[in-house]
Image (tube, rainbow, N blue to C red):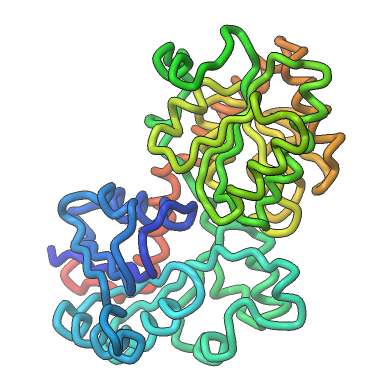
Length: 379
């Protein structure tokens, strides 16, 4: 049987939630049915090394002095040669535009786009798609989103048909992320006091993630639980400002800025609570799914697709975005009530396995691609 050729198109496989999803989907697809390629307009990125050996990788289409002008003809040339049956773009912006134009020129049977961007304040009065991408939505066989809210937005604001929009919740690797005893070596490396509660936030250090609110909540928690420790996992442009704020708040000794890490499962196994502090923009954050799978209760704002992941009062707590006192209060509750913590930890693991596994996510993507392929007359 001839395998279906699927080309995923994005910018670069940097460390990010959307990029992790792409890698998991590309790796997980049934190789008896699908042949997979990943096309990157820029450099491969840190997550490219996690792709399976049989995934073809094409990168650097924007390289060179005239890269911006040559990216489209380069992509068109590759697609004309490889002849994908399905082109699946991931994300908005240039890859969304270039991938679909090249797919149309190469006469791909199926053109799909994964849109994971939740509208934020910067999108008020304008399209999240962009003028040209919105104009070209007719090229799409369909669109895949990660939340029902984003599906409704695409219909109500962008005018994209509901019947052509499909929701596939993000998933996480429930074998890699699982409840395990904390590593004594990692505890020693981070100089964590024995028995102290540990809070982790795994997010890029960018303004929209509002780590400043996390640090302010940390200051409140430390007044009642001075032995607690707080991990900040991720890199980004806000690092200097956040370190300055930690010093200003007098909490620097209790806060560990760890930068980007590749041992997130082990860090979560050290954690008592996993937190997010964003106030405006979140779709279906992978860090919350990883916490679920690891059996770590979550405290997160009730925005975007987070309420679809965090079951309030069951796997963790939702709070009104920006409410530092509520964030701190929920952390303290989970520190102090061991029975509640144990119940939420167990419920988190169960919810991840039943609703948010990588396997379910991969099957969803395979089914959408299959839906638009012509029937095989030999079957």
